[in-house]
Length: 361
Image 1 (cartoon, helix red, strand yellow):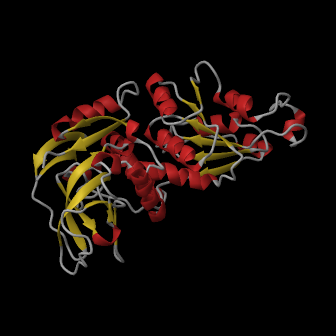
Image 2 (spheres, one colour):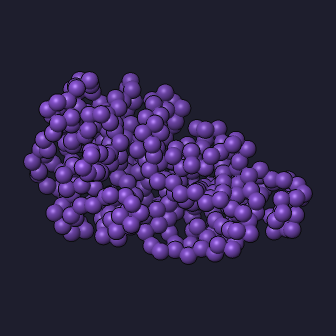
């Protein structure tokens, strides 16, 4: 099979042997696969990323020097099954799945594994028990958005919204945009979104953000005050500090940038008594916060990572039935020969948002 292989911090197209399904596994062909921001991190900071995951309790490990095939945001078609498979879905069925291989003995992540190549290759091996058929005529590239959109859905679920909050989304890259999509699908709002990139601000507005801010010109937290608080509310005043006087709607900050200093900015910028911060952006470096600032404001901080199987399935069905509209996320598609250039383009926030890899197979 043809595949894009990551080895020695470089991407190259190679011909590899077709993978063979084991017991309870399915052989599938890739129809569409998204390039994830985590893939960019893995290309340039592989050792640091793996070390961070392992310290955080995520049993993710592989030998990058041996070459791996990225790709965990995919839609595929069933070709065949291995031994002892139940074969509930017929060959030819289009499917999505959570990109995990879980057994009593080990854990593998499809696309971050020496044994389970991902959707940057023409064929993959997936566990039969995790396959979800793509409903109806949902296009394969839209179905492949299920995985990143489920990350946004999980972040919103972690926020525990009661319905009266005014969310603030910091960073409108793919994950921030997925959070905006999930917020609007849940009925939350108005949603304030902030990003330095004009392209990403336009995308945030297209996907439903109600107030879109260039933080170089206007504070997103001041925008929150303007839409969430009564006219005489002063977030710096003594009444606000003790929860007295005119009351604003609660603030929920989704930090979707993932660089040092962003969590502290959310702590410093969010109003007292009414703020919780959901950290969604994956920061690869050590960071510093001032606990006394968050303590004085009695803020809550939640961490969000991944998604549940229920959130994944609900996202796929939401795309199919129209509850979730996300096609605008896809800014271009490439074949395997165009993947290396797509990685370069994705490093420029004014160039691309979500690039899909498609095979002519």
